[in-house]
Image (cartoon, rainbow, N blue to C red; front, top):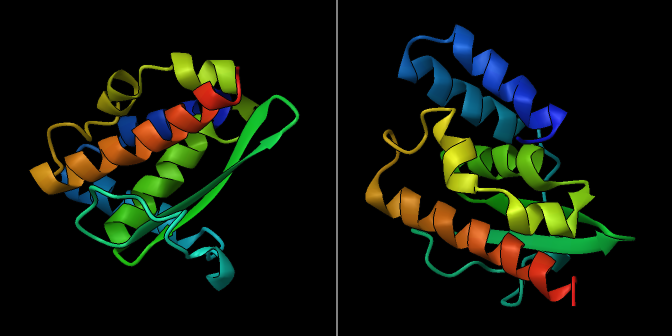
Length: 137
């Protein structure tokens, strides 16, 4: 089970019957995020495998994973916001253990994203889980 911040999104999505409304909510979550500083939009933070430009900047805060991110696509920015609700501020061991596909499936994202967006989302998850795994060693 995911953290409370992600569970809030799950609860909000349960009230939205139409995928269009859920899509708009994801976009709004992305709009509410602070932009990533330009200095962090470098090749080292760029995520390969995404159709749009995506940058993730994970860091460790003690044993907790923290990350910022941004995309040039509104829906992808929203997906980054959803991933922040799922992963940001939790122990690295939990980041590695969370079945992101299952958790995101609770939002209905799996069946409503294009193949390119799904590949990009998977690349972002792999980046974050890989970072967490490296910091467990």
